[in-house]
Image (cartoon, rainbow, N blue to C red; front, side, top):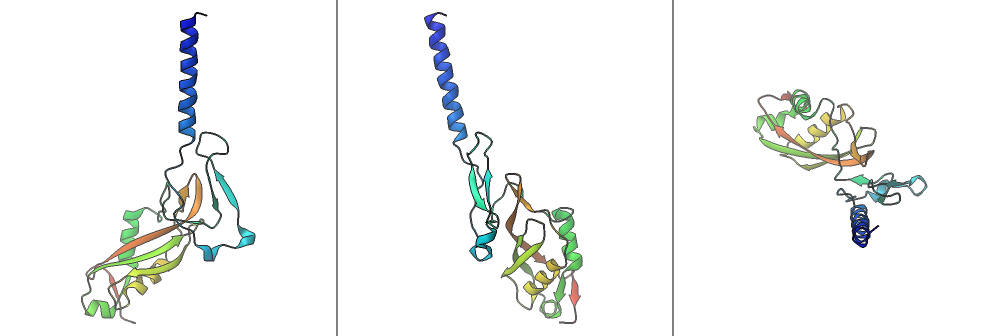
Length: 177
């Protein structure tokens, strides 16, 4: 082998090694952004290794009950969001007081989509008063399981915020409240 070919082979090998090293040390774009410590139990904590696809041992660890706010695949209701929006209009019971006061605008409800798709930990982030937030929570509790959020191919607990636009012309009015 000539000196020139040997020199090219060495440069090529170094270039490939540097390229591989820099791509394998990059971290996944999605990161664990929050953890709900109150739901963690010491005896039930399990660690998962998430491989970034480069080398064994690279990746991040998270606890089994970690709560994600960003995932690679978002949670989704049965049938998708378009079908779910129609389901909301058909199943949201607008409180009579809200109807009487011609309430307009959005209600924001956050909740956790668990790994098995159930919805838990409901919080009214903001509402228009007259029981509009509580009506949203009651409606969501009656719904079906969702597809869970996915992080590195694993179903994870995911925090989700759902805006509900109040449409007093199309929503049912709950006269019992």
